[in-house]
Image: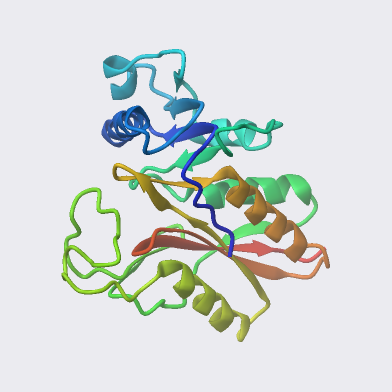
Length: 250
């Protein structure tokens, strides 16, 4: 599993400048004012120049509105040289309504690494066994341990606010179990798990180092040149999106 949970960061990329991205930006700025989190700069990424964050927040010395497609931004930003920062490593704040962007980034990276191999999205047909388990048309499975309506901006504490009982589940552990089950049927590597963990004031994020580790996992899985699947998950403690990336043989 690859994951990241530092309480501080260098640059923080907030994916989406709509209502969620605007809320996350405000929350992080309040958290920094009160000493709950540190960062060097916030990047709010949205292709719409008139998005809510641009209209309501604008730019400051440590807040920038990046007017760019999410995928194009990640393709550039994730591979940029990263100097050592006293604040910590760079991090990503995903939107709960965005597509499986980290998986899509890994697909593009694999196709660039092996242009002669067939790199495909594969439907994840195996059921995970969670109360909510819904396959999307693109083959991604959206999973949740909740069969209830979760509180808005829940931080997934040890005591579940919906059940008022100890939270005994962990989506990252389920990804490990699912990968082991898949490997019994056909060659499967991973999982590459991007764990969105609460940092401060209802904002979850994962580190760029976790994404880069996932890319290295895919590269290692494809080294032998044989056909193999890689299980990729972007998860929190309770919810997640899981996809299969198939690396064709040479």
